[in-house]
Image 1 (tube, helix red, strand yellow):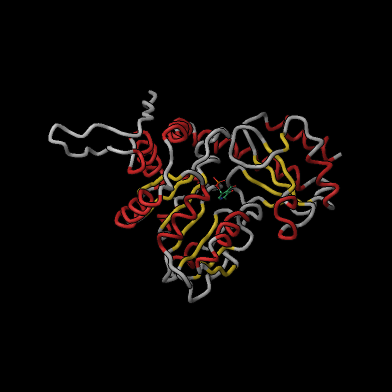
Image 2 (cartoon, protein in one colour):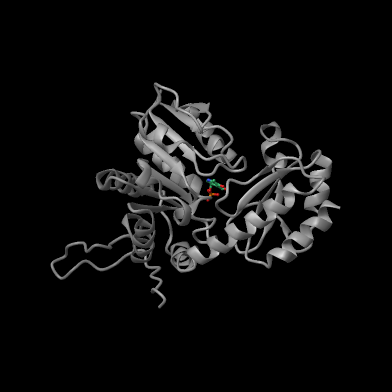
Length: 320
Ligand code: PLP
């Protein structure tokens, strides 16, 4: 069954002139609420949607933190999260990076983890983070609820770039926060309505549709990523292969930036583009975006749904 898509920005008051559950889209809308309910069930909390993953990140830190507060940020995670925090530095937000496989530093007001991190593919020590007095956020974009439900491991919030696996078809930009505590979710909802960092119905409808096939897609993408990682490990031109055994994302190193550029521009089936989590397999060299943060020969692959044997054949010919 397909859910209706309601694009209205306003709905009539009831017969007594009182607002109903939905009255103005910035405060909530039926299609967004339906997608939030579906995602909340998957992650075991209260979900709220935002216009992008970066929008969800911004809303969370602005609502939870104040000037002078410090975020402990997992080193080697999505570089854009650090860029978002740096954009908020003029408002007094501080960041310290740490190794998420160990203990978060003391004297921070928020712990930000990524499971697994993009593109280093490390997994956080959730137990160590949960013992920290500050609230814990897990960016579980790459794991998805199919592989990890961080709220069950003591996290306070899950963040998703729903643009990726959750919507899953490279055609919807969305972010999500799933909250363990219903009162915290209500505070965020109020902050979202007041600041207007709110998701629109059309991408929410695409998310609803994407969630119906999430498990099947992620299972297949995981099998394919594991298959590619295994073959890459045996290839003489490949150095380090990073794959933690879950999810559809992997990265590996070739000799240098020039070789990486040659490989990514030589694939025929695998598309040379950024992003991850869609049905099409993508490859890109990350140093074009992240500079010295990553080895110059680091290539990231997001496994899609194509035939794994054809993907490996394509990659093998591109590796020369
Ligand atoms: N978190 C991770 C792990 C990501 O890979 C991305 C985007 O690549 C984001 C967050 C940001 O999400 P969005 O592009 O939807 O703003």
